[in-house]
Figure 1 (tube, rainbow, N blue to C red):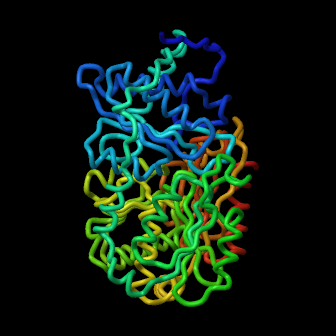
Figure 2: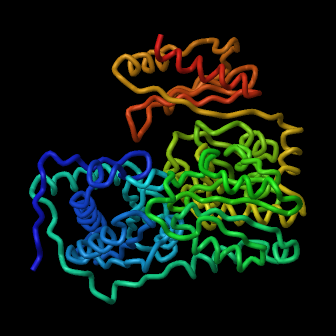
Figure 3: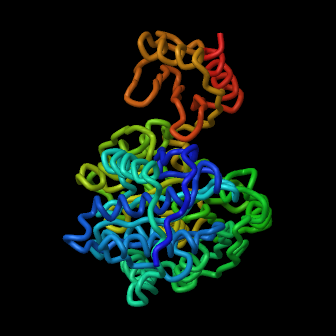
Length: 478
């Protein structure tokens, strides 16, 4: 018999941010809310009338298995047909499966790169991208209505016929069909892959091994604590990977993916962690040179300038869009771009992925090294010689009423000069971005996930970047 859980009326509401709903497990994110979202998703997808097929997946986090099983049970009870993935599934695999199999939707339990205390969920739309606000706003409203009425009953386990969906094999077949496997097999680059104890471990390792590279793995065992650090590929978390590459010479490459494997980072021989814009620029250049990008590039407004410069030099149109990969996904779906990338290590190529895919990005980086028969730094040096080098960074300030008012004033009356440079363009589609005559930019934007105003900046050198970030913060606190 179904059980109706008691629901604390003070329990935090379901709120979708930049990429899904997430928060500290048991506090901002909770099981009653997850069940309510699952029921709302079934209703949105047309259950019970159309018996929609909905994928259910999870990463390696605490309570992931329980969340996925309860969501599948709720979907089945509502008249949907849940496809419950067996074991851990990377978000990119789930997203491409929804699109390839023409499912009504998908729900992935993950908090991506956040620390272990967090849990969350992402809703995948039928076109294979994270659901945009028109969908998530409706889901949140319905889920919160259900919670105020006492929550969603917990049915028994979903029917066994709905368990055991294994989408990894089809994902890998599609990936292999689009890669230059002969170049990889001939060059046999050495790849050090850091899974960060996340969901990408199994699929990425299968991909690299089947491509014929010499594979070395770090932190490949699933661990809901992520070894004590957040599964975010950054300088502070990739010490072992950069150390391993610091001793390497020749055709070596380091790749890391975050907790659900939608983001990536690349490390070159010598242990240099590539900046997100540099890594994206290399991928853009590689995809155009190999004839796999013709329509255009979509990038977030906070992304560094090198990818845009490389794309335009190849004659590729470029769109700057608001932060949040769902906006870039829309350009891929509409066909105005076939490549997309962002400031946080996200990359997608439309034939295979309409949302960010760290496994795809890592394999393409390996292909680049194999085809060029040189480390990443060699090609990056060529790009910098043509387009110049720049340094990108971000900072943040706690957002109160005074800071919000200053941000609003900046948007209404952008300054004509900043950091001693003339402002050549002001873009207010998402916060305020100022492009500067001497190169680089500054961007102020309220965070979509926490009460913080972010300041992003790019400058020709590190000293200039530090100065620019300080000036950006000062503009909010004077």
